[in-house]
Image 1 (cartoon, rainbow, N blue to C red):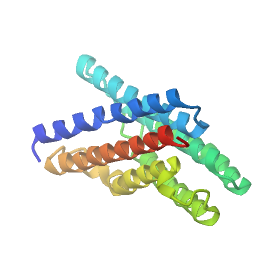
Image 2: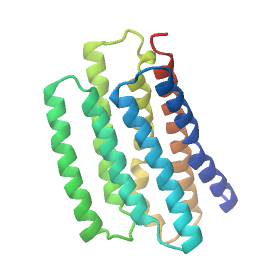
Image 3: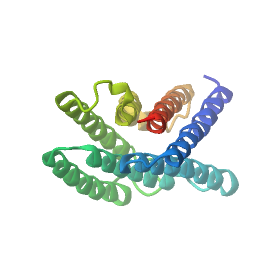
Image 4: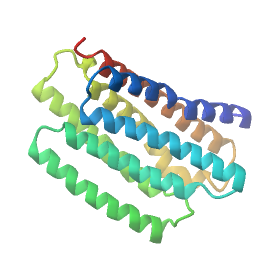
Length: 220
C-alpha cells in the first residue's frame, strides 16, 4: 500500500462520521428518541472532534496526538458501555456493566500514567476495550434472542449499532494486540494495518448510519 492510498483511506474514514451524524440529526428532529440513540450520537460527535483535534495539533503544532487518541479511547468505551447498560433489561447485566465501567476506568488511568505513558499509543486500552465490548455485544444479542422484543430484528436500532461495534472491534482486535510491532518500523505493513483499521471504521460508521435511519423511520 502506498502512502497516498493510506492517506486516502484515512480521509474517507474521518469524513465517514459525517453521514451518521446527518442521519442522527434527522432522527432526533423527526421524533423523540431513547437515550441510547442520543448516546450513539454523542459517541460520533466525540469521534469527529477527536479526529479534528488530533489532525490540527499534529499538522499545525507538531504535537503528539496520542493523548487525544487515548482519552477518546476511554470515552468511546464508556459511552458504548452506557448504551448497553441502558438497553439491558436484566438487573444482573446492568450491575455487571457498572462493575466493568469502574474497573476499566481505573485500569485506563493506571495504563495512561504508569504503564504505556501519556505520549505512547495506549494499545492496552484498546485491546482490553475491544475484548470487553465484543463480550457485551454478544451478551446483548443473547438478550435479543431470549426476549425477541422485535420479530424483525433489522428494524431494531440496537441490532445495527451492535453489528457496527462487533465488526469494528472484532476486525481490529488483532491489530491492537500487535500494533507495537509495527509502530517503530512505520513500513508498508504499518500502512496496510492502519489502512484496514480505517476501512473497518468506515464500515462501522455506515452501520451506525443504518441504525439512525431505522430510528428515524421507526413507527412511521
